[in-house]
Image 1 (spheres, rainbow, N blue to C red):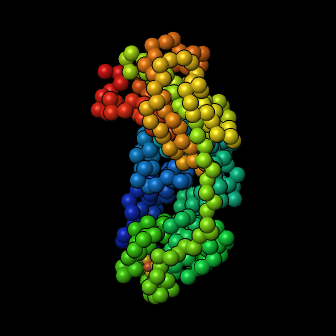
Image 2 (image 1 turned 90 degrees about the horizontal axis):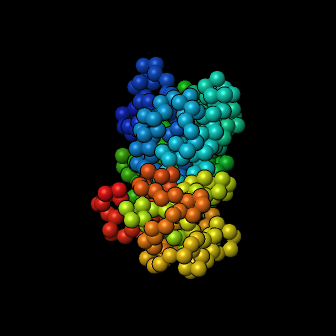
Image 3 (image 1 turned 180 degrees about the horizontal axis):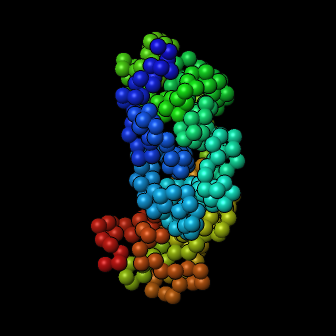
Length: 355
Ligand code: SF4
C-alpha cells in the first residue's frame, strides 16, 4: 500500500467523530458533506480548538440550519452567538459571506478553492479545506497538524513559515485524487491524535514504516520554526460600574477597528498605538472608583494589560451607555468578560446578577 492508502485505511477505522463531519462510511454510501456545515466549522476552527468549537457549531446550526437562515439573521444576533470565540472580524466576515452566497450565488457555495477564496473570511487554507472536504476537489490542504506530520515524515528542517511551499508540494503529491477530502481530514486526525506535538505515538502510526523522523528517534524537534518577535505590550484601564441590582454599565465600541461593534465596559484608550492611561483619571465619569485587579489578554498583534476599577454607581447612564441586567447575554469579547468578572470578584460566582 502507498502511504496515502495506509492512512485512509486507518482513517476509515479510527476517524474522529465531529458534529460537522460526514463519516467515510456515509460518504461511501453516497452522502455528500453539507458545504454550509463544512464552511461554518472551518471558519470557527480558525485559531480555535475543536473542543471549543463543537458547542458553538451545535448552537449556530440549531439557530441557523442553512446558509439562507444565517443570511436572514441580524449581524447583532450573529455577534452575540459568536461571543467568546474571539477574533470578531471572523464573525462579521462569516455573516458577509453568508449574505453574498445568498444574494450572489443563489444560496449555493462555489465548488472550487479558487472561487471560494473570493468570498469574505475565506483564505487559501479555508478555501482548500472546504473544496476538498465538501466538493472533493483535488487540492492540497495544509493546516498546523498536517505541517507537523509532513515535516516529520520527510525530515523537513527548513523553518516555518518559509517551509510552507515545500510542505504544500509534498501534500499535493500525497493527496489521492479519489478521496482528497477524506485524506485531508485523515492527516488532521493523525496530527491531532497520534503525531502529537509532544511524544507522538509512532508505534501505532500507519505511516511509521516510511517516516524518516521516527527512524532517527527524534520526531519532536519538528516542525522547525523561525523565532517569533515579542509582541508589543499595551496598558489601559477599565471601569466597571455596578448598579443596585447587580447590573453592569456597558457601551458599544466604534464600528471600525479592533473588536468593532462589540460591547464593553468603558475603558481608557488602549487601542491607540501608544499605551493608554492606567489611573482613575481616565474614568468616563466621577464615582468612587476602587482598583480591584488587572486582566491580561493576548491579541494577534499585541498584549494588553487592563487595570480594573469598580464603582457602585446608581447613576443614570451617560449617553451611549446602558445598564445590562445580564452581561453574559451581551455581545462581549472574552477580554471584557474577564474584566467584569475581575470587578465582580468572588461575589458573582454562583449568583445570578438578576437575583
Ligand atoms: S511515525 Fe511518528 S513522527 Fe512519523 S508521522 Fe507517525 S507519529 Fe508522526
